Amino acid sequence: MTLDLAVLEAYHDLTGAAPEGIWRAPGRINLIGEHTDYNDGFVMPFALPQAAYLAAGRRDDGVIRIVSVDLGETFETSLHELRPNHDGWHAYLAGVFWALREAGHDVGGADLALASDVPIGAGLSSSAAIECVLVEALNDLHGLGIAPMARAKLARITENAYVGAPTGLMDQAASTLCTEGHALFLDCRSLQVQQVPLDLAAHGQAILVIDTLTRHSHAGGEYATRRADCEQAARLLGVAALRDVSVDELNRRLPELPDERLARRTRHVVTENQRVLSACAALRADDLPRLGQLMTASHASMRDDYEITEPSVDLAVETALANGALGARMTGGGFGGCVLALAPLDRVEAIATAVTTAFSESGRNVPATFVVLPAAGAGRLA
Ligand code: GLA
Image 1 (tube, rainbow, N blue to C red):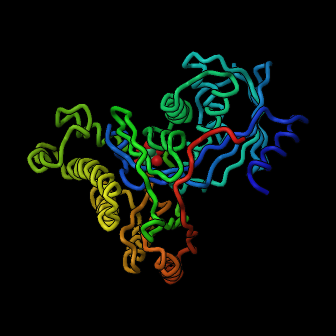
Image 2: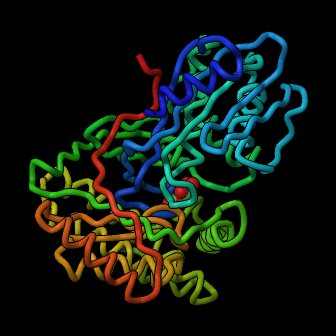
Image 3: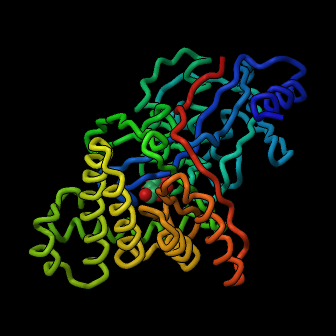
């Protein structure tokens, strides 16, 4: 059964009635620009065909009832009980009601049925998809008229202030603002966006996603540590954010930092910002070999300077490159999850096979591999 029908049926089982509508919000894959968003830098994600689907209808008693089709679980709370927490899958939805109300929007209770095929914990923004699909639904149902970037920011507030994960804006902006057939270039300081055409098939290329099945969690730990390192480095360098250091200044400025770790973190962010700008130019010039080189350089920087890769993603990248990919890199927060490889259409199958073999031979679980095309951002289904 398709997910739109699954949530329709689950909503009916929950309420005995039809929903007021069904909404969809996608996961994303980041083409390039990792750990740059919270440094006021640049990112270039695109929306995935995989998405969260939500059937929704308003209630006038302040009660929130949510059924998860995927988990077969129901959760119930009410508007006046909402307190920031990360006690489970429902926090990503309950937190949206909280964030909207904190921002002064008059939203009431609701019945909701949710299903998603965005892999969880794979670096493909499964949580942003859930937050963003509910922001869309409540914006439409209550006629709030919140502009797209402001909707993305509210979804991010849910993640940061309610769930408690100190993430940047990229995932929610991608889920909300991406358009089919394009990557989204986002300047995370000015919040200016550009829709950059990404028609790989026209150039005989494709993006293969390799899900290593190594899982991460961002709620604590390493993500927050990296963020703190960047803030400390920016303070010591006397800039508002690492965005304000240019590649040309890098060699002169790095010796000002007290230790090698902060220097490496800074080098990653500064060079990664430049790689996003170069990748955007390469795409606009149809120079896919150049895009591939930048992706591979991004991976090396995440591995050596930002130290957020791990052996499975490194193996996937190396194997893809050895078998004809133009470029390959880990995507998302790090410590596992997915690799994306830019490859000629006639090499995709061979790369998937080679990665599967390399994983089996090294005693790892067989990775999931699939080709993706840039899909549409969040919206209501007809
Ligand atoms: C996670 C966060 C994003 C971003 C990436 C790393 O996906 O949610 O805000 O920081 O990691 O680029």
